[in-house]
Length: 287
Image (cartoon, rainbow, N blue to C red; front, side):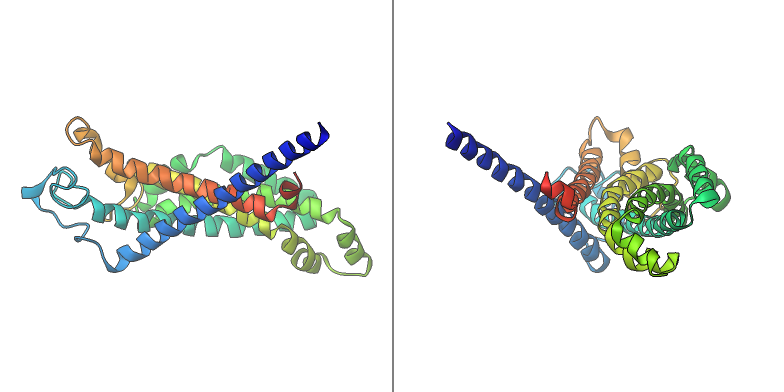
């Protein structure tokens, strides 16, 4: 009986490990393909994304172009390709800015503690009370809709997210023996943060960044849907969804295609984040 139980456990363990690796592989493949399409759109698309051909408007897929045309006769495939670059560039820029500032704030709070930590947490609470879409509406009233407004709104929301994660992981690192030893030999808090704390939490920051990219893509699409994202004629998946509402009955592909693009992108980044977490977090590997 014991050998059978052991063999069954080993089999389940192999299946479990394989499933976790598949998350990483699938996420990496999806994200890699999206990045390739985004970069390709900078040098080539089947047709200029903003080119209108009214005579060919609302053509179904394969009737005119691979994925048909919209209400202005614009090629849907070209718009999806260009929208991929716009969505990824806004999301990656916003997460990079928010992640950098939030990580610096979290690591600093863990090193300084006291009033600075309390003040940072209260500021995070205030920002969390204002969703990114509401922040974008306020910014849009002063700056107008556009790429800068979308990046700023998403980045401001990302700062407290990364600050809290980085603070929690940094506090755990500060309780480790190697940090106590570094303090005992006279290293400054800045030196300890850069040499000992940051290298031990950087993997968790990367994993969290990959997961937050999916949320940033979704937020950018929501902002564009409300008219607060990229200004026309720059293609955007969210605005393609907004424009397609009127034509759902007789041109459903105008909503289905950008919706699938958004869903696949968010799913790919989530799978990539889960796979990276399993790969880089030793606690997950032990489990």
